[in-house]
Image (cartoon, rainbow, N blue to C red; front, top):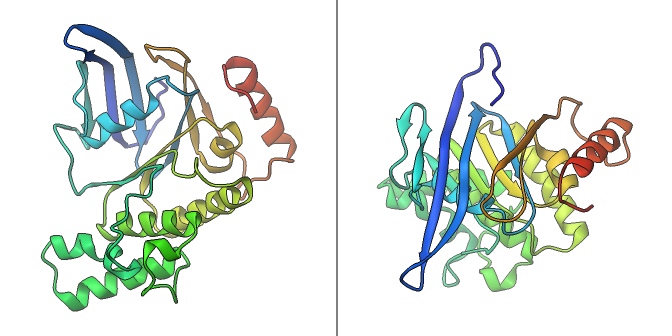
Length: 258
């Protein structure tokens, strides 16, 4: 793991291993000796090919899976389960079909016992932040894929988490909408600074979004590959020379394709 001076590590994973038991006795070794640091308020991208265990690693950080080996910590405290300090956005939209945009986004504050007026104010703030003002009374079936995912992001932010965890959230979108959502995600992160861990198999997406890119090797069990610092200025364009240079470097060292 790389070390930097004067950097607070929000999340620390040490020697994480994960084995699933299938059909009673068959063992599937998914992760092996994964060690990773995520800095406070940084946008860290976990980049790897399909079926390399990157989503399982994210679920361990979320507290939805327990590692077979090793440990994961948030602010120095062992992660033992889910908590409101982590917001989750998955590839599937997972919205409440019977609730409006407003109803979906204000669900978290309501469950936290906040007064109705405060819940509405919080939800309105994040609906506006993700650019859905005017759609508060729409239901999920009335929204496009990109709009549904924006509702999911707003709903996660409305819980005021310290960390946002996004698992290939734009994988179901067409290329144009995906690029738009990447730019929107960057804008939202810069507006409301949080620690973000973002999983993807797309190199360009990783380069557009990440402060650092932690790569994982293909085929199970997943292992950590090189970690790349993306220190050129935002917003980033895939045609910039620095962008193309780092993309080539990652492509040459990984099993990913453009």
